[in-house]
Length: 354
Image (tube, rainbow, N blue to C red):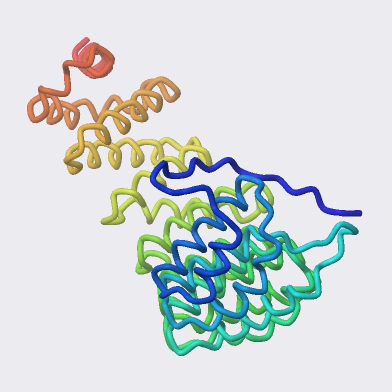
């Protein structure tokens, strides 16, 4: 059964002529890198708009694929993505094996950015016949000396495992071992996200073995751990006390994004009064610390929701809120914010002075 092609409509620039096959062939065969790039851009846009350029496939293989121009190579990846790779019967065209050879060469390229871009392209490739020969080199890229290549290798393996799990059946174990040995924070973050998505139990086992290290980890890893805890707390309720303790520690993070996400996660994990007060204190600290007024308003709204949900628990924080009144009066132009602060402090006064 043939695959149905779905096209995107891309507006062509008015200063460009409608592509002519003979002109495109000439530009691809004899043009400079700049002319070839412009021709390839026309072919990509035309393909997205539903034009048929099947006769140009071998010209691109012969005259564009051998290029060393990095921009042209990147556009070549875009072309591999949009070019029709199946015949009328739904079978992969014989010529597409040449695409596989090109990708293999780029995965072994001496330039790490070309390797990384190729690995990112593999995230969008769904063709089993094309992916199968690329699995070995992709796995090898996990041990590359450049972190840029390694982090993209994790993304590629994540995508391949989700769409064609039989090609990398041991992907979760592979990434778990990678995570144990890796030092780059972005690589570790990508690995954690993959484990959350593909094997939550394995991700939880890793977290439980690393709880004493979480507080010293980089902020991007801490954010992925908070996401892991959000999902794992529903599936592994017996581990919730450990998760709560971990998130509680992250409230003291120097990173505003980690502090905010930890506060948001903690209120979904527990109704303990001490935890709710700690969340309220952290949100007030964020309001006082952040310079972006939009961020302040978002955090104030979150604090107001917390006050309404846990009535009376945050009354002791009214004195801290007075700092917001004195320091950020320009924010009080919002009636919502003024109403919130007034009701908060008014309630505190009523309960403190009978």
